[in-house]
Length: 152
Image (cartoon, rainbow, N blue to C red; front, side, top):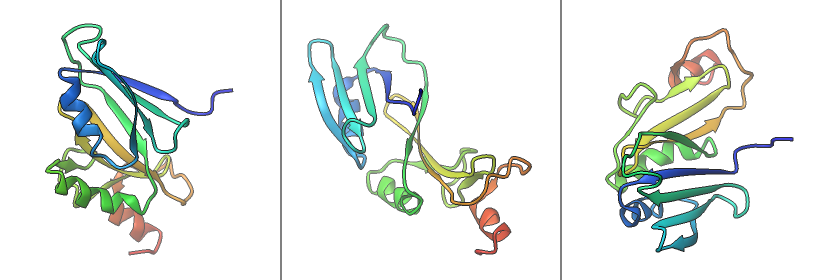
């Protein structure tokens, strides 16, 4: 039975530069580095639960933009913006607009913040909300979602 995604691997232009970037993110724990293959692996969060691998120019020197999301707790979403700003990493919402107003995906429901890595890969921090899913609703701002639930 499938229980979740265990690992994601991405192709990078410079694995040392990318390693420096990812090692600044919270709960990214270096696991193994293979300098001969120009690759590095990380535990994401608790060791043994989720892994990220980066590899330079594999299978080719072309780097195609990819997307992946790290699951975070809801209280970490507002903190993420400040933390990323401190690292001089620009963040945005789902629509590529300012991360001052984040977006909720009602069908889950979840709220998230986006940023790019050095190769332009789209990285997301996403937190599930405790509310019931509302697939009948369109994507909306977090403040609209909170008002809908009487929490504004």
